[in-house]
Length: 246
Image 1 (cartoon, rainbow, N blue to C red):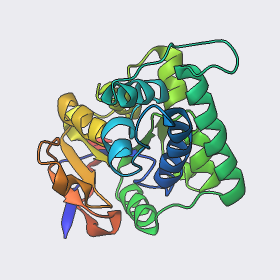
Image 2: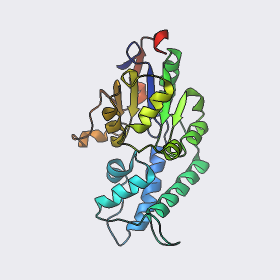
Image 3: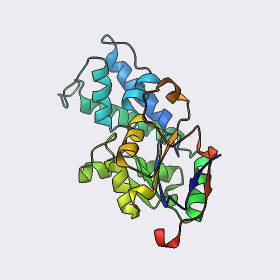
Image 4: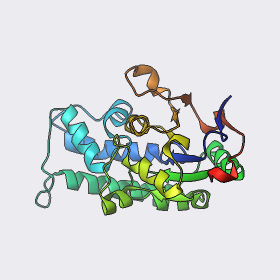
């Protein structure tokens, strides 16, 4: 079993959707509904597996829309009159659908993720959650795991202090700064291609790819990780963070 060694790692930064919560599928379903409505008569339907994974997953909403539309040779104005599609109107529609799903179905945390978070905390690690979503804190609270994170850096923070979205490492770097731990002693646990690229570019001490659906098999060009797992229950924790490293 792969392990996080806390004699060399003092902190862990977790992507939220698809890593510690089950909300990635809800995001993908909302995007499919929005894009299929827009694409009707313009292009083939949105592929919830390939298109979401390659162009949308892990990116801020506006960036995901621009990136996906560009892959189809399409574009939209940033804003437009009521009733006319724009980047902003598609983002708002997706947001409404995602929030409606949360109200109707709630949020669940992956049991393996909760166990790993508890073990990391027990052994002295500092922990942060990172997400491109503006709803990260609400999702963590709904899943009853907000208290397991020392810090949260999400889309609201990115907009407020002007942080670029992934694949830029700025969100992760900000999380490590708030935790007070050097990048080389920080692990990043990610499930998206932009997030993995960001972690590698940021020079973090350990990069863990949580590839729940085995999608990386079809993408040999994807960013490399130090460890690849299909779920957090495949990770163990060894050692303990030295007091001087906390």
